[in-house]
Image (cartoon, rainbow, N blue to C red; front, side, top):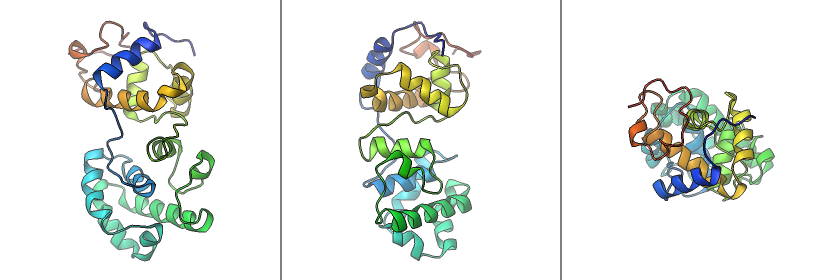
Length: 216
């Protein structure tokens, strides 16, 4: 990748740490299983909505077996407001069944094992590994990371796997977890898809603003 950024990565990280020192995963969870379920539910849904749903969901389901014992229609109803609930319910049950059959009912701690769970791709696996097990293996490339990393000139790619590869090459491994969260927070709070608040951005003097047509 030919980087088009106009700053050094340490400079970027310093500013992000100064601005978002507490950047973290905004999904609520108390166990790896809860985070896995919440992340599956977060597809095409806001973290705020997922947290509203899981507040009740996690009081009803405590283990992988619990998600299999309930009728499918009941689980679908419990997660309906997150959208795409039929597909998500099937993925949750499939993931739970695989955990029981292959991993002693536990959430796997390895990337290749997590990717064997139905409904789990690299994005979900990275969320779980980094936040539940404190083992960041890459970047969570969501819509915010995709947008902000392009505007900053950290990637020329649009494919999430290639974007992740570019970010892993540009940013030191010990900063992957923080940088991922901070970029997401920046995208949610300042660098919006439409009308980004460039005048309020702590990166405004170093950001090339690639693809930005409206600079509020």
